[in-house]
Image 1 (cartoon, one colour):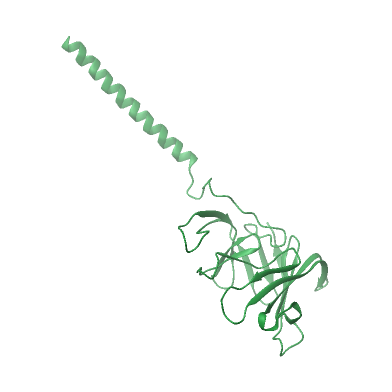
Image 2 (cartoon, one colour; image 1 turned 120 degrees about the vertical axis):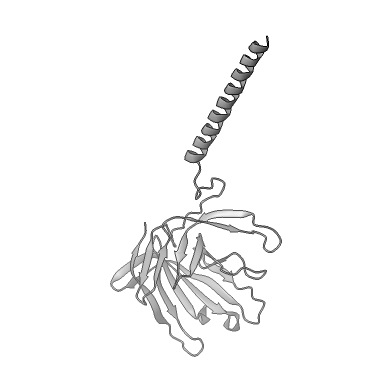
Length: 221
């Protein structure tokens, strides 16, 4: 009887070892082929909108020498939606653009991520709106606030013999001289292209705008 029980004991131990081995191998196989360090199925991807189509791999080249490039793939941006009252609770896959030098920003529809976030500085600041009206107001609690406003939609503009349709014009001005007529910066965005022109003036010293940049070349992937 002892020999019989010993035989069955050895068979059970061998069977358990095989079961554990194949279970671990199967788990390793599943993890190997189903997981990616850049893949997070719980985090949504926010695709670009038509007036700033920052799809991965795209770029814009301007007459002042500036080049804006979009990274080849979406990047995971983690932040606290109720800063500074809570932990990180939101993760999104967003386009990443390279600005002047090595400065980077995440693009969430028509907003850029802010490098330094505080109680007064949100995670994202809007830079554009397709609708007429104010889309941006600074929150610095100082004596002078800055406003961004969309002043014209569905217009056209010609730049270097190229006519752009479906153009939207935005302006920025300070509360010291409140109103779009006192704007110090004016930008033009074309549908399915992005920023095509920027003008500035030192109001009230200057009454006329001067061109800061115009679109020279671009590629939307």
